[in-house]
Image (cartoon, one colour):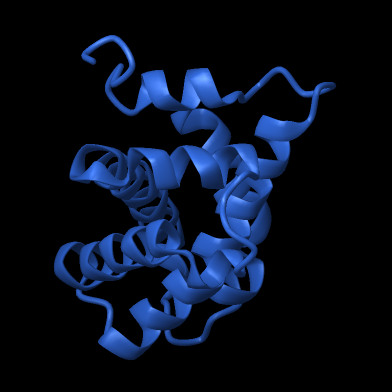
Length: 139
């Protein structure tokens, strides 16, 4: 799962990370690694914090009719990414908020698309949940 999310982050990080003058070019790889790890951690926190149903609904496209960016799970993951960028890499709050706000909804949207695409076996709801700690097995 980490590799899939990393590929999505790399594919969509151009404007918000690579071409961002506020992020030094020698930090780009660190930022991409941190964003990827933080998305995984944020998804895990959402699942463990009782948001499993909401997260699963988001992953399978059965959540409410609201936008992905305003979904509580997305916002929780964004906060995790933002905090990690600030604390681990010393990125300013404004830049961290901008990176998290642009990348997280985009990457989660692509991840959901992959999970719902019958022709794409790289991600499904079950593999996503098992990578977040095997939460189905613990119930």
